[in-house]
Length: 137
Image (cartoon, rainbow, N blue to C red; front, side, top):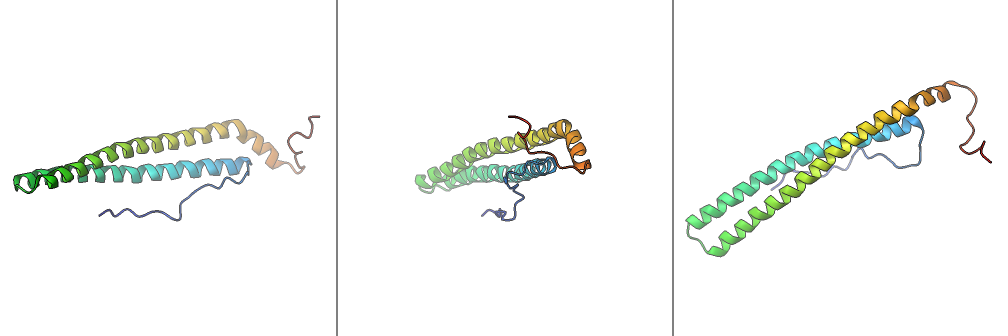
């Protein structure tokens, strides 16, 4: 049996339309952290699946050596193959989670480089900034 448990209190960032600089930075950081955590958990799952696939393959050999009915050998081999195939897909998902975590971090740094100065200016003055599009007619 697996000892994996689903997470109910995840760190999901809300897509609430708040596009202020600090809110976007927080959302990108939250996304990156969540993807890093998912990547770590997927890596553990991948190792477990590979181990179980190897155990099932060994068990199929043991069943065959014990001269049990061939259908049990075939079923156990199918389990081994299925776990191996699932492990391949989990590996792809793991790689994707790592990629998304890296891209979220890159995006956060680029966003900060482009907009942090503007946020500093806007946050430091007393006057309110007009809504976007106010000056365009």
